[in-house]
Length: 161
Image (cartoon, rainbow, N blue to C red; front, side, top):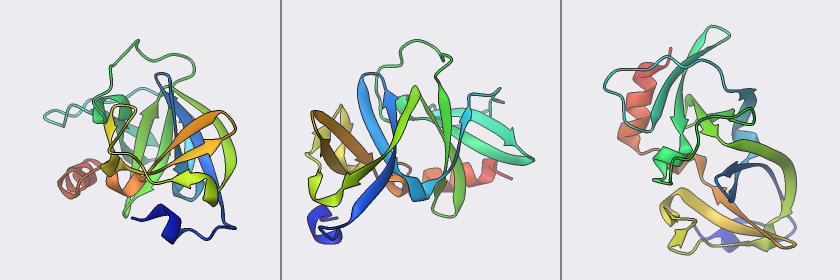
């Protein structure tokens, strides 16, 4: 995806920013259904390593992916009071992304977004559609639809009800 070509220069992106370790990531606010505190997870046997388990959110079973594990980042301390689950729409499936903390909702001018280098914050560029510059901050823009492969989406779909 050519970030510069796909975005109108006057466009402003609305992003939910969050932390994984010391890095700041973001997802398009239009992909986010809600943000919830970490709740008790039910483990699912034989699920991929990066799947923490499932939660029951108002009668809907939602698989939860630990983004640190998914991206092969160091898995630091266990969950804290700041740990959140960002409930997103991936394809036609609802998935929770476990993150260290949610920072803010921000508006980022599209012209400040650059295409990703081949490796950003220790994760491959296949998961990223750009890196945004906001004052002295670099914000990694995740492509929610590419965080999981087709096989993984299908496997998670079988966990969800």
